[in-house]
Length: 148
Length: 107
Image (cartoon, rainbow over all chains, first blue to last red; front, side):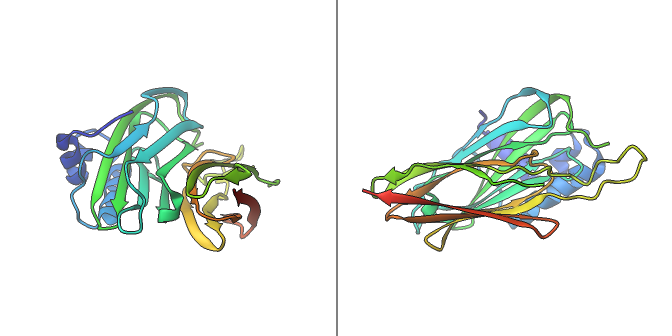
């Protein structure tokens, strides 16, 4: 479980600059930053609201349980419309995006993801009014999801 | 290769109750990143889109990338205000579509 500090949120907002200092492969970092920037539409992510349930250390990157919940009343006038998941060092950093209607009742999901190695998993949530919330968790992966 | 998806959802709910829906579908989710023994790239074939509707209205949809694990598992919720039918579809790169439906009764 992880909640972003305001500082972390601003670092995610900084996008490629924040990713560059983590020493990732340039292409994956660029793609991750571009994917997040396109989702945010230029809005700076805010901290809070997101509960990101993801182990800090996993043995097998082929199937990593991920659970996300965003605080929201899920009413027609106030709901989470979309959640984006990015794995910033995967060869294809975009993991999935979930589109919710208020009928979902909760802005939450669980699934299993592939991670090729040690990296950050970043979750961005978009509210109906365009506000963006972010959370991030670093994951150490013993055996990465196979890419060869 | 696909088989019938597995879906767990309550048969009954109270009006306005938020119910948990758990789905699992068999699919290799070939990422397109792997190579065969001869070094040739294995073409991507994944489920790229999932959607769930209730009585024809959207509840949740998901754009899926190769980083979702094989045999995709998705767990989410729905607020049920009336009896009706959930429809689920999974669409794959090769054009195949897997679909299923489940009914729930409000009492």
